[in-house]
Image: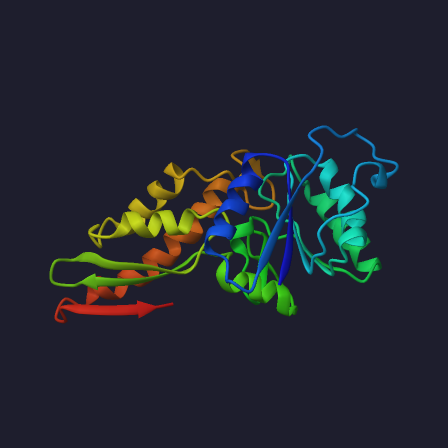
Amino acid sequence: MRILAVISGEYGQRNVSNIRRHTPARWKVEVWQAPSELPLIINAPADYVPPTLPPADLLLSFGEQRGIAELLPEVTRVTGARVVIAPVDNEAWLPRSLAGQLRDRLQELGIICITPKPLCSLTRRYYATGRGRFIEYNDPLIAEFARYFGQPKLRLGADVGEQRISVAEVVRDTVCGCARYVAQGLVDVSLEEAEQVAGLLHDNYPCLAGMDLDADYGDTLLHVSSNFIKDNVGEQVRPFKRNRTSRVRTRDK
């Protein structure tokens, strides 16, 4: 799979660095550094996109300014990409109204575009756009990407007698690498404190999702993101707490 990541700052750089470190060998990941400054109104996107870019199957938009979304149709034309993942990790970078316009515009061009909010809500079948709102999709390229990166999924093992986590493996990492960081910090943590510690590790990473109150969730996207990893950890340690008769057990969600 050929991937082109559009970046403009620290958020995109960290995402790309983690993808490249843990990408399957069959993936090729290229980067385009978008312009650091764009006008409020972009009348001619081709003026801001190079005439040649690496060919791509999947486009990842990690821009940190709203104007980058307006360039994406032109980027898909230049690269030949047929699928776009444009996450909403911060409303200032990609407001919900612009995300909807982007999906509609790319659909008109025959291109699949998803806008997970936040990016770590993405699974191999669906993604979130708000509290209790999930959109299913059916695309093999997105599903292949979400096999490795998206909603955090750990596999935990526990020493039930000692009531501590003994193993923490990453089944699916977050795009930014936070899930891997949390997994490393959970080993030898008590089962009683595991969920809380997971949340603290998430915040210490730190997560770069928005910290303003989001209308679609009634919460900050940073807190929503934290809940994904906490819920995954909490679901797995719960059976260990109930079963203290077996010395070691593992459970995969």
